[in-house]
Image 1 (spheres, one colour):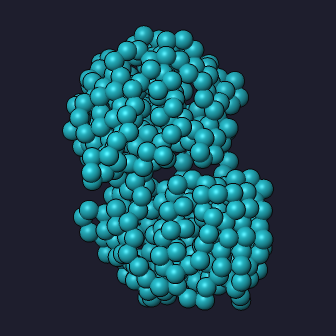
Image 2 (cartoon, rainbow, N blue to C red):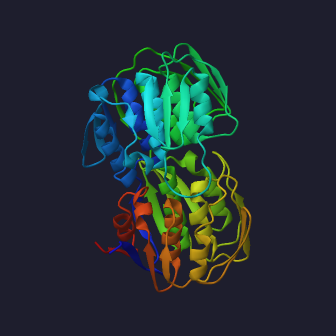
Image 3 (cartoon, rainbow, N blue to C red):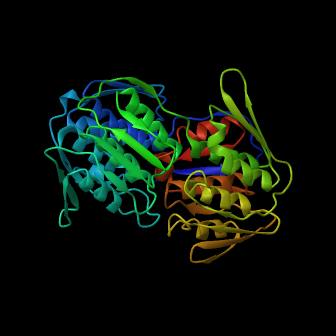
Length: 425
Protein backbone atom coordinates (compact mmCIF):
# COMPACT_ATOMS: atom_id res chain seq x y z
CA UNK A 1 0.00 0.00 0.00
CA UNK A 2 1.32 3.43 -0.91
CA UNK A 3 1.79 5.85 1.93
CA UNK A 4 -0.14 9.08 1.90
CA UNK A 5 -0.91 12.02 4.16
CA UNK A 6 -4.43 12.35 5.50
CA UNK A 7 -5.10 15.98 6.48
CA UNK A 8 -8.04 17.28 8.48
CA UNK A 9 -8.14 20.83 7.15
CA UNK A 10 -9.45 24.09 8.51
CA UNK A 11 -7.35 24.13 11.67
CA UNK A 12 -5.44 27.28 12.57
CA UNK A 13 -1.69 26.72 12.97
CA UNK A 14 -0.33 28.20 16.19
CA UNK A 15 2.91 27.73 18.10
CA UNK A 16 6.61 27.40 17.36
CA UNK A 17 8.43 25.37 14.72
CA UNK A 18 12.19 24.96 14.26
CA UNK A 19 13.72 24.86 10.79
CA UNK A 20 16.13 22.09 9.78
CA UNK A 21 19.37 22.32 7.83
CA UNK A 22 19.17 23.37 4.19
CA UNK A 23 18.51 20.52 1.75
CA UNK A 24 20.06 22.35 -1.20
CA UNK A 25 23.25 23.07 0.75
CA UNK A 26 23.48 19.58 2.26
CA UNK A 27 23.26 17.73 -1.06
CA UNK A 28 26.24 19.74 -2.38
CA UNK A 29 28.34 19.77 0.80
CA UNK A 30 28.24 15.98 1.29
CA UNK A 31 29.94 15.31 -2.10
CA UNK A 32 32.23 18.31 -1.53
CA UNK A 33 33.72 16.53 1.49
CA UNK A 34 35.54 14.25 -0.99
CA UNK A 35 37.80 17.19 -1.85
CA UNK A 36 39.16 17.36 1.70
CA UNK A 37 41.16 14.15 1.40
CA UNK A 38 40.64 13.86 5.16
CA UNK A 39 37.64 13.19 7.44
CA UNK A 40 34.98 15.91 7.75
CA UNK A 41 32.14 16.26 10.24
CA UNK A 42 28.92 17.84 8.98
CA UNK A 43 26.33 19.09 11.44
CA UNK A 44 22.70 20.24 11.13
CA UNK A 45 22.05 17.95 8.18
CA UNK A 46 18.33 17.38 7.56
CA UNK A 47 17.22 13.78 7.97
CA UNK A 48 15.58 13.54 4.55
CA UNK A 49 15.56 10.99 1.74
CA UNK A 50 18.11 12.84 -0.42
CA UNK A 51 20.65 12.95 2.41
CA UNK A 52 20.17 9.23 3.05
CA UNK A 53 20.66 8.54 -0.67
CA UNK A 54 23.90 10.52 -0.74
CA UNK A 55 25.11 8.71 2.38
CA UNK A 56 24.54 5.41 0.59
CA UNK A 57 26.22 6.65 -2.58
CA UNK A 58 29.30 7.79 -0.66
CA UNK A 59 29.47 4.42 1.10
CA UNK A 60 29.27 2.56 -2.21
CA UNK A 61 32.22 4.63 -3.45
CA UNK A 62 34.18 3.23 -0.52
CA UNK A 63 34.05 6.22 1.85
CA UNK A 64 33.45 5.56 5.54
CA UNK A 65 30.25 7.38 6.45
CA UNK A 66 28.58 7.46 9.85
CA UNK A 67 25.42 9.43 10.61
CA UNK A 68 24.00 9.91 14.08
CA UNK A 69 20.65 11.21 15.30
CA UNK A 70 20.48 14.98 15.23
CA UNK A 71 21.86 15.33 11.73
CA UNK A 72 25.59 14.77 12.31
CA UNK A 73 27.57 12.93 9.63
CA UNK A 74 31.24 11.96 9.64
CA UNK A 75 32.73 11.34 6.20
CA UNK A 76 36.16 9.79 5.67
CA UNK A 77 36.87 9.92 1.91
CA UNK A 78 40.36 8.40 2.15
CA UNK A 79 39.01 4.90 1.51
CA UNK A 80 37.22 5.74 -1.78
CA UNK A 81 38.30 3.04 -4.22
CA UNK A 82 36.26 3.55 -7.39
CA UNK A 83 35.57 6.28 -9.92
CA UNK A 84 32.52 4.42 -11.27
CA UNK A 85 29.42 6.27 -10.03
CA UNK A 86 26.84 4.69 -12.30
CA UNK A 87 24.68 2.61 -9.93
CA UNK A 88 20.90 3.17 -9.90
CA UNK A 89 20.73 5.33 -6.77
CA UNK A 90 22.84 7.98 -8.52
CA UNK A 91 20.46 8.43 -11.44
CA UNK A 92 17.45 8.72 -9.12
CA UNK A 93 18.43 12.11 -7.68
CA UNK A 94 19.30 15.41 -9.28
CA UNK A 95 22.03 16.52 -6.87
CA UNK A 96 24.23 13.51 -7.63
CA UNK A 97 25.80 15.66 -10.35
CA UNK A 98 27.94 17.36 -7.67
CA UNK A 99 30.00 14.18 -7.65
CA UNK A 100 31.26 15.27 -11.08
CA UNK A 101 33.10 18.32 -9.73
CA UNK A 102 34.16 16.67 -6.47
CA UNK A 103 35.56 13.49 -8.06
CA UNK A 104 37.15 15.28 -11.00
CA UNK A 105 38.80 17.83 -8.71
CA UNK A 106 40.12 15.16 -6.36
CA UNK A 107 41.02 12.24 -8.61
CA UNK A 108 40.96 13.67 -12.13
CA UNK A 109 38.53 11.00 -13.26
CA UNK A 110 34.86 10.01 -12.89
CA UNK A 111 32.16 8.07 -14.71
CA UNK A 112 28.76 9.33 -13.57
CA UNK A 113 25.21 8.27 -14.29
CA UNK A 114 23.18 11.21 -15.56
CA UNK A 115 21.06 12.64 -12.76
CA UNK A 116 17.29 12.37 -12.30
CA UNK A 117 15.07 14.04 -9.69
CA UNK A 118 11.72 15.80 -9.93
CA UNK A 119 10.07 16.29 -13.32
CA UNK A 120 9.65 20.09 -13.38
CA UNK A 121 11.12 20.92 -16.76
CA UNK A 122 14.36 20.77 -18.70
CA UNK A 123 17.40 21.05 -16.48
CA UNK A 124 20.34 20.43 -18.81
CA UNK A 125 23.87 20.08 -17.50
CA UNK A 126 25.50 21.78 -20.47
CA UNK A 127 26.84 24.61 -18.30
CA UNK A 128 28.43 22.06 -15.94
CA UNK A 129 30.15 20.40 -18.90
CA UNK A 130 31.22 23.75 -20.36
CA UNK A 131 32.85 24.66 -17.04
CA UNK A 132 34.71 21.36 -16.67
CA UNK A 133 36.01 21.56 -20.22
CA UNK A 134 37.19 25.12 -19.62
CA UNK A 135 39.22 23.80 -16.68
CA UNK A 136 40.92 21.33 -19.02
CA UNK A 137 38.85 18.18 -18.56
CA UNK A 138 37.88 15.85 -21.37
CA UNK A 139 34.14 15.24 -21.01
CA UNK A 140 32.19 12.67 -23.00
CA UNK A 141 28.50 11.84 -23.06
CA UNK A 142 27.70 8.14 -23.51
CA UNK A 143 24.04 8.45 -24.43
CA UNK A 144 23.61 4.73 -24.97
CA UNK A 145 24.37 4.15 -21.27
CA UNK A 146 23.07 7.52 -20.02
CA UNK A 147 26.48 8.18 -18.52
CA UNK A 148 28.91 11.10 -18.49
CA UNK A 149 32.67 10.46 -18.40
CA UNK A 150 35.25 13.08 -17.41
CA UNK A 151 39.02 12.87 -17.17
CA UNK A 152 41.81 15.39 -16.63
CA UNK A 153 45.54 14.88 -16.14
CA UNK A 154 45.64 18.35 -14.59
CA UNK A 155 42.90 20.92 -14.10
CA UNK A 156 43.94 24.51 -14.77
CA UNK A 157 42.18 27.70 -13.75
CA UNK A 158 40.19 29.60 -16.35
CA UNK A 159 37.78 32.47 -16.84
CA UNK A 160 34.29 31.06 -17.29
CA UNK A 161 31.13 33.00 -18.16
CA UNK A 162 27.96 30.98 -17.65
CA UNK A 163 25.42 31.44 -20.45
CA UNK A 164 22.57 31.17 -17.94
CA UNK A 165 22.52 31.59 -14.17
CA UNK A 166 22.67 28.06 -12.78
CA UNK A 167 22.99 27.10 -9.12
CA UNK A 168 24.12 23.58 -9.99
CA UNK A 169 26.75 24.64 -12.50
CA UNK A 170 28.08 27.39 -10.24
CA UNK A 171 28.62 24.96 -7.36
CA UNK A 172 29.87 22.06 -9.49
CA UNK A 173 32.54 24.09 -11.28
CA UNK A 174 33.49 25.76 -8.00
CA UNK A 175 34.16 22.30 -6.52
CA UNK A 176 36.48 21.28 -9.32
CA UNK A 177 38.22 24.68 -9.46
CA UNK A 178 39.23 24.42 -5.80
CA UNK A 179 41.84 21.85 -6.78
CA UNK A 180 42.79 23.34 -10.16
CA UNK A 181 46.15 24.96 -10.79
CA UNK A 182 45.97 28.77 -10.76
CA UNK A 183 42.99 31.11 -10.55
CA UNK A 184 39.49 30.51 -11.81
CA UNK A 185 37.04 33.37 -12.33
CA UNK A 186 33.35 32.47 -12.59
CA UNK A 187 31.01 35.12 -13.99
CA UNK A 188 27.21 35.33 -14.22
CA UNK A 189 27.00 32.96 -11.28
CA UNK A 190 24.11 32.04 -8.99
CA UNK A 191 23.93 33.93 -5.68
CA UNK A 192 21.60 31.69 -3.66
CA UNK A 193 22.32 31.20 0.06
CA UNK A 194 23.35 27.58 -0.46
CA UNK A 195 25.99 28.67 -3.01
CA UNK A 196 27.50 30.84 -0.28
CA UNK A 197 27.23 28.00 2.24
CA UNK A 198 29.13 25.59 0.00
CA UNK A 199 31.84 28.23 -0.56
CA UNK A 200 32.12 28.77 3.20
CA UNK A 201 32.50 25.02 3.74
CA UNK A 202 35.21 24.79 1.09
CA UNK A 203 37.04 27.73 2.65
CA UNK A 204 36.90 25.94 6.02
CA UNK A 205 38.71 23.07 4.27
CA UNK A 206 41.44 25.47 3.14
CA UNK A 207 40.10 26.58 -0.23
CA UNK A 208 40.49 30.19 -1.34
CA UNK A 209 37.16 31.40 -2.66
CA UNK A 210 36.07 35.03 -2.76
CA UNK A 211 32.89 36.64 -4.04
CA UNK A 212 30.30 33.94 -3.34
CA UNK A 213 26.94 35.71 -3.16
CA UNK A 214 27.98 38.27 -5.80
CA UNK A 215 28.06 38.15 -9.61
CA UNK A 216 31.71 37.05 -9.76
CA UNK A 217 33.43 34.27 -7.82
CA UNK A 218 37.23 34.06 -7.75
CA UNK A 219 38.90 30.79 -6.79
CA UNK A 220 42.61 30.29 -6.19
CA UNK A 221 43.25 26.58 -6.66
CA UNK A 222 45.01 24.59 -3.95
CA UNK A 223 46.96 21.35 -4.31
CA UNK A 224 45.57 20.05 -1.05
CA UNK A 225 42.66 20.74 1.27
CA UNK A 226 42.00 19.40 4.76
CA UNK A 227 39.20 18.09 6.90
CA UNK A 228 36.97 20.28 9.07
CA UNK A 229 33.73 20.43 11.05
CA UNK A 230 30.91 22.49 9.56
CA UNK A 231 27.27 23.26 10.37
CA UNK A 232 24.76 23.61 7.51
CA UNK A 233 22.67 26.80 7.28
CA UNK A 234 18.89 26.73 7.94
CA UNK A 235 16.67 25.78 5.01
CA UNK A 236 15.33 28.82 3.17
CA UNK A 237 12.61 26.86 1.38
CA UNK A 238 11.38 25.01 4.46
CA UNK A 239 11.23 28.36 6.24
CA UNK A 240 9.15 29.84 3.43
CA UNK A 241 6.83 26.83 3.37
CA UNK A 242 5.98 27.22 7.06
CA UNK A 243 5.57 30.98 6.64
CA UNK A 244 3.07 30.38 3.85
CA UNK A 245 1.28 27.60 5.76
CA UNK A 246 0.85 29.89 8.77
CA UNK A 247 -0.74 32.58 6.61
CA UNK A 248 -2.86 30.10 4.64
CA UNK A 249 -4.46 28.71 7.81
CA UNK A 250 -5.00 32.21 9.29
CA UNK A 251 -2.54 31.15 11.95
CA UNK A 252 0.10 32.64 14.24
CA UNK A 253 3.42 30.77 14.07
CA UNK A 254 6.92 31.56 15.32
CA UNK A 255 9.52 30.02 13.01
CA UNK A 256 12.92 29.57 14.67
CA UNK A 257 16.45 28.89 13.41
CA UNK A 258 16.08 31.10 10.35
CA UNK A 259 18.13 33.70 8.49
CA UNK A 260 15.67 36.58 7.91
CA UNK A 261 17.59 38.28 5.04
CA UNK A 262 17.24 35.06 3.02
CA UNK A 263 13.45 35.39 3.30
CA UNK A 264 12.96 38.99 2.12
CA UNK A 265 11.19 38.16 -1.15
CA UNK A 266 8.70 35.85 0.61
CA UNK A 267 8.23 38.25 3.51
CA UNK A 268 7.42 41.09 1.12
CA UNK A 269 4.74 39.12 -0.74
CA UNK A 270 3.11 37.80 2.42
CA UNK A 271 2.93 41.32 3.85
CA UNK A 272 1.52 42.60 0.56
CA UNK A 273 -1.21 39.97 0.90
CA UNK A 274 -2.12 41.23 4.36
CA UNK A 275 -0.10 38.94 6.65
CA UNK A 276 1.84 40.35 9.58
CA UNK A 277 5.49 39.30 9.50
CA UNK A 278 7.81 40.16 12.38
CA UNK A 279 11.53 39.35 12.55
CA UNK A 280 13.34 39.03 15.87
CA UNK A 281 16.12 37.53 17.94
CA UNK A 282 15.36 35.64 21.16
CA UNK A 283 18.98 35.65 22.28
CA UNK A 284 19.71 32.21 20.86
CA UNK A 285 18.07 32.11 17.44
CA UNK A 286 16.69 34.49 14.88
CA UNK A 287 13.00 33.96 14.32
CA UNK A 288 10.18 35.06 12.04
CA UNK A 289 6.62 35.31 13.32
CA UNK A 290 3.82 35.12 10.77
CA UNK A 291 0.23 35.86 11.75
CA UNK A 292 -2.90 36.26 9.67
CA UNK A 293 -6.56 36.79 10.57
CA UNK A 294 -8.32 37.85 7.39
CA UNK A 295 -8.71 36.44 3.92
CA UNK A 296 -5.57 37.40 1.97
CA UNK A 297 -5.43 40.00 -0.76
CA UNK A 298 -4.43 38.94 -4.25
CA UNK A 299 -0.83 39.63 -5.26
CA UNK A 300 1.24 39.14 -8.40
CA UNK A 301 4.71 37.61 -8.44
CA UNK A 302 7.40 36.44 -10.81
CA UNK A 303 9.91 33.75 -9.93
CA UNK A 304 13.50 34.86 -10.36
CA UNK A 305 17.00 33.84 -9.36
CA UNK A 306 18.03 34.92 -5.85
CA UNK A 307 17.34 37.43 -4.37
CA UNK A 308 14.07 37.32 -6.33
CA UNK A 309 11.08 35.18 -5.44
CA UNK A 310 12.29 31.54 -5.44
CA UNK A 311 10.79 29.08 -7.88
CA UNK A 312 10.75 26.46 -5.10
CA UNK A 313 8.11 28.51 -3.25
CA UNK A 314 5.95 29.39 -6.24
CA UNK A 315 3.79 26.28 -5.81
CA UNK A 316 3.07 26.67 -2.07
CA UNK A 317 2.41 30.38 -2.65
CA UNK A 318 -0.13 29.55 -5.36
CA UNK A 319 -1.94 27.24 -2.94
CA UNK A 320 -2.15 30.13 -0.47
CA UNK A 321 -3.45 32.58 -3.07
CA UNK A 322 -6.27 30.22 -4.13
CA UNK A 323 -8.45 31.79 -1.41
CA UNK A 324 -7.30 35.40 -1.87
CA UNK A 325 -9.65 38.28 -2.65
CA UNK A 326 -9.20 39.13 -6.31
CA UNK A 327 -7.02 37.62 -9.01
CA UNK A 328 -3.32 36.86 -8.52
CA UNK A 329 -0.95 36.54 -11.47
CA UNK A 330 2.00 34.17 -11.09
CA UNK A 331 4.74 34.06 -13.72
CA UNK A 332 7.17 31.12 -13.64
CA UNK A 333 10.46 32.23 -15.19
CA UNK A 334 12.73 29.39 -14.09
CA UNK A 335 11.13 26.04 -15.03
CA UNK A 336 8.66 25.51 -17.85
CA UNK A 337 6.80 22.59 -16.24
CA UNK A 338 6.29 23.90 -12.75
CA UNK A 339 2.50 24.07 -12.89
CA UNK A 340 1.92 20.33 -12.49
CA UNK A 341 0.13 21.02 -9.19
CA UNK A 342 -2.57 23.16 -10.81
CA UNK A 343 -4.87 20.30 -11.82
CA UNK A 344 -4.68 19.00 -8.25
CA UNK A 345 -5.55 22.38 -6.73
CA UNK A 346 -8.53 22.56 -9.07
CA UNK A 347 -9.83 19.36 -7.44
CA UNK A 348 -10.17 21.39 -4.24
CA UNK A 349 -12.25 24.04 -6.00
CA UNK A 350 -9.45 26.43 -6.95
CA UNK A 351 -10.02 28.64 -10.00
CA UNK A 352 -6.77 28.75 -11.97
CA UNK A 353 -6.19 29.43 -15.67
CA UNK A 354 -2.89 28.79 -17.43
CA UNK A 355 -1.25 30.37 -20.44
CA UNK A 356 2.28 29.08 -21.06
CA UNK A 357 4.29 30.25 -18.04
CA UNK A 358 1.60 32.46 -16.51
CA UNK A 359 -1.07 31.34 -14.05
CA UNK A 360 -4.05 33.51 -13.13
CA UNK A 361 -5.51 32.54 -9.78
CA UNK A 362 -9.01 33.86 -9.15
CA UNK A 363 -9.51 33.57 -5.43
CA UNK A 364 -12.42 31.58 -4.03
CA UNK A 365 -13.73 31.86 -0.48
CA UNK A 366 -12.92 28.29 0.55
CA UNK A 367 -11.33 25.10 -0.70
CA UNK A 368 -12.83 21.66 -0.07
CA UNK A 369 -10.85 18.51 0.67
CA UNK A 370 -10.23 15.83 -1.96
CA UNK A 371 -7.77 13.10 -2.98
CA UNK A 372 -4.61 14.59 -4.49
CA UNK A 373 -1.37 13.32 -6.03
CA UNK A 374 2.00 15.07 -5.75
CA UNK A 375 4.20 14.98 -8.85
CA UNK A 376 7.33 16.57 -7.40
CA UNK A 377 8.76 17.85 -4.12
CA UNK A 378 7.48 21.42 -4.07
CA UNK A 379 4.18 20.48 -5.69
CA UNK A 380 3.77 18.16 -2.71
CA UNK A 381 4.40 21.06 -0.35
CA UNK A 382 1.76 23.09 -2.19
CA UNK A 383 -0.82 20.32 -1.76
CA UNK A 384 -0.02 20.11 1.96
CA UNK A 385 -0.57 23.88 2.32
CA UNK A 386 -3.83 23.61 0.38
CA UNK A 387 -5.00 20.65 2.43
CA UNK A 388 -4.27 22.41 5.71
CA UNK A 389 -6.39 25.39 4.70
CA UNK A 390 -9.22 23.46 2.99
CA UNK A 391 -12.39 22.33 4.69
CA UNK A 392 -12.85 18.60 5.24
CA UNK A 393 -10.30 15.85 4.63
CA UNK A 394 -7.56 15.93 2.02
CA UNK A 395 -5.46 12.86 1.20
CA UNK A 396 -2.12 13.56 -0.49
CA UNK A 397 -0.41 10.70 -2.34
CA UNK A 398 3.11 10.71 -3.76
CA UNK A 399 4.63 11.72 -0.44
CA UNK A 400 7.92 10.05 -1.37
CA UNK A 401 8.61 13.33 -3.19
CA UNK A 402 7.91 15.33 -0.04
CA UNK A 403 10.22 13.08 2.00
CA UNK A 404 13.07 14.18 -0.27
CA UNK A 405 13.06 17.70 1.15
CA UNK A 406 11.12 18.10 4.41
CA UNK A 407 12.38 16.67 7.68
CA UNK A 408 9.75 15.36 10.14
CA UNK A 409 6.98 17.21 8.30
CA UNK A 410 3.99 15.60 10.00
CA UNK A 411 5.58 15.86 13.47
CA UNK A 412 6.37 19.55 13.03
CA UNK A 413 2.92 20.35 11.67
CA UNK A 414 1.15 18.35 14.39
CA UNK A 415 3.10 20.26 17.04
CA UNK A 416 1.62 23.56 15.79
CA UNK A 417 -1.93 22.34 15.63
CA UNK A 418 -2.34 20.57 12.29
CA UNK A 419 -4.31 17.36 11.93
CA UNK A 420 -2.08 15.33 9.64
CA UNK A 421 -1.28 11.61 9.64
CA UNK A 422 0.94 9.39 7.53
CA UNK A 423 -1.15 6.41 6.43
CA UNK A 424 0.04 3.11 4.95
CA UNK A 425 3.04 0.82 5.25
